[in-house]
Image 1 (cartoon, rainbow, N blue to C red):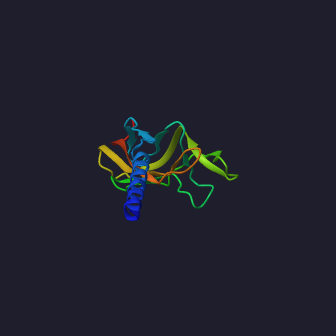
Image 2 (image 1 turned 90 degrees about the vertical axis):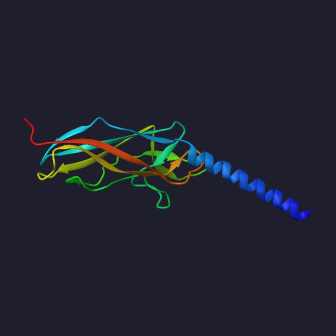
Image 3 (image 1 turned 120 degrees about the vertical axis):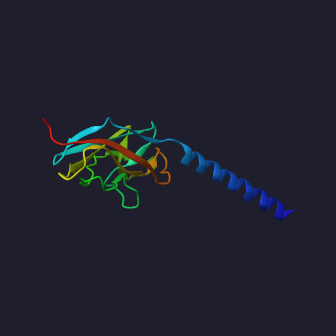
Length: 164
């Protein structure tokens, strides 16, 4: 009888953990808005913008984070297409305090715009390109933080010979 009770308890615990993990991982908390194609001439520099929407009731850890044990929001772009990308420029975070904690965190809420400085080499081929990468973040609500996750990002770019 003891074995059956223990197994039942273990099974119930596994189901509860799986349901919560599935809910947390399956909920779309963050989405990015694909931008209109950006036109850049060979040899020119500009900033590409990655605009992110954050679901109401959630926030993301800023970059840099206020606590070294939290995961900062970060944009990692793949090199290529004769485009030279500099480090992303993150906006300043907003102060946020979790319920029951005296620690003030630095976070992003509702909308986040990351600027990505880019230069097109003069040897770049003319035509459409996609700048691809990944946005990594740790979403939190007012009580706790969820597991870190990532979403793919793709920015359309049109390379032209020279501006008239």
